[in-house]
Image (cartoon, rainbow, N blue to C red; front, side, top):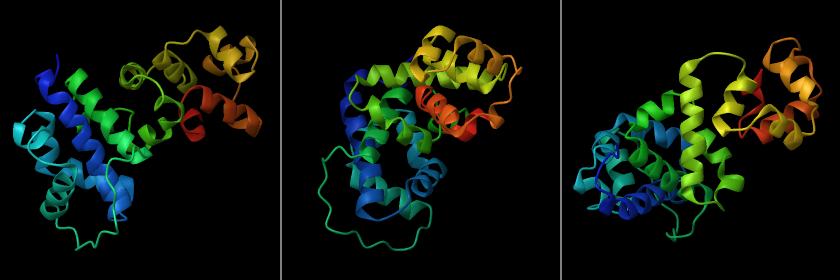
Length: 212
């Protein structure tokens, strides 16, 4: 079930994208640090619940300033900031707003179930060039796989992407037999060559350390 009426969605995506863009590129706050403040604020709950005040009544800059004020952040002195440039941070907020609307999950639930804002940033390439529904599909599968907590990390992320073992093997240049061995814990991925681990993580849209 969608989190709120679809008529609010374009404004919501624009506002959340601009909020993260302004916080990071205007105020110089680390993405993860600001997002933690966002989750701790009433803004996240109100936005996720579709309150018009947040999803359509405030600009991204106003949302960011509300988060900083509510969480007791020190005064920030923004640099010259030109909004509207779809940087990585903008895309993160824009895509997360869509995922939260489509799924009905809270931002906190998403963050705590296998998809941190840092993870989203790492998905910027190449997903920012795809339709946002593709991001939501991959993210949703990843969160569901995380929640099940069964099998190996390689299997979790492969299923989250909707890939067969054969497709994953082709993507990362590893034999099907090795993919099966990693998923069945017959081979220790922590002892694999760095290039193998890196290729797998790229193919699975995750961090190398998440596979070990």
